[in-house]
Image (tube, rainbow, N blue to C red):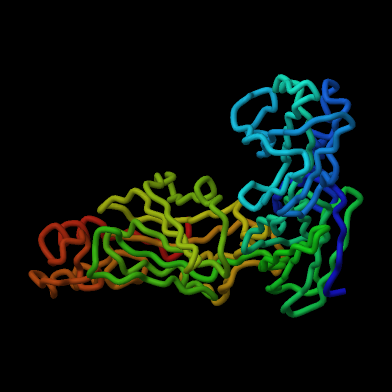
Length: 435
């Protein structure tokens, strides 16, 4: 079923469109008509009003007769939104008119909603009654299309429940129609009158909803529903220095021990993680960057929804040689699917196999724990510091616009004495295997 008509019989509806688990109640309360009990004043029992609209009316012009059972020649009246007028207030009553004239009023300038008509009728003795003894009549004007508020897009991994989504003074119907999408879509109604929408295939569905009130006024809105039941995955990890431009961002490879090869970046302190789809904003408390002996403080975290990438800046030192770990857990995509993050890390640089991108086992749920190696003394990138590294610094000594692989360990752009002493002081360090 790719279309459905649902009837809403309540009179006053609050328009919302919310996403909740199927079966969740929370229908807005129905308000009674605040003027339903008002009637004619007893002091004017010998006069009555004929032709008053009843209940809810879409009339924008009325012709109401002041019928009297005794001699009377004139009346005065006023009509306005009920919330803005009082019959007992003498203001705004019009000039006297003969009772042979009907109350011929154009209501177009009045807002939709409850209206109040107040009529003062001169009695047979020529006396005007006090305003609080006026004849009164009430009804509700409904001459506008139903108001509908609906978000442009929804993401869900389960049937989506739309709360009653129309505001109008008369009963309305909701017509749902699938415009496009990869599968069949069903529309059903809960006992409380909410609309449940589900699809048999994942993907993007364009849906049109049209609401029509008892007088034929209608309005339509289109929304996009994305049914997504797969967990998001990590598709790549890059390392770069937030303070340098000479060394480009390094994309860490997966699939083997090459994942552990020393990152060719001086002062690496930024991790860029790419995802298979847009994530929620739960990253703030779900990211950790750890070393062998300490957890590195996260100093900045940003997220680019369009690119589905998280950028994590962490504290760093120019003097460290460390086996690093980045950990993601507890995050989800916009449909609520938990990260599919399982990852098998290599133990040593020479390992022939490890997980490859994207992460995960095909099921939502699972933390992403990823190893990489940073060093301040390994320009030849073999995960250890020896005389060959010292030789690189010596051969490039004094070079400008240099990179880490040229021996610029401290990130100044020049291979200098600090680089030479740093590398020389680390000879013997070895990170070919994780500790």
